[in-house]
Length: 66
Image (tube, rainbow, N blue to C red; front, side, top):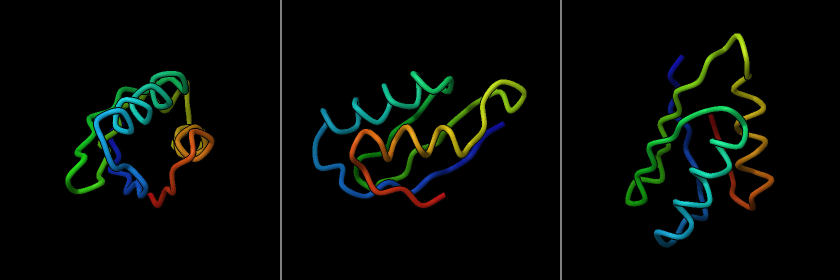
């Protein structure tokens, strides 16, 4: 599945990497657009939920709206 998530609080490339790492740790793959704050997430809904991915991003310290 593919979802677009709006993430606030990213201000640098390090932030984008942190978000991508959080998504990967939760079982997805992320394409992060730092300029727009959008994260496109690809994931297998049989293995991981979108909620667990957004929780991982929030736990990394960012504000998430799916």
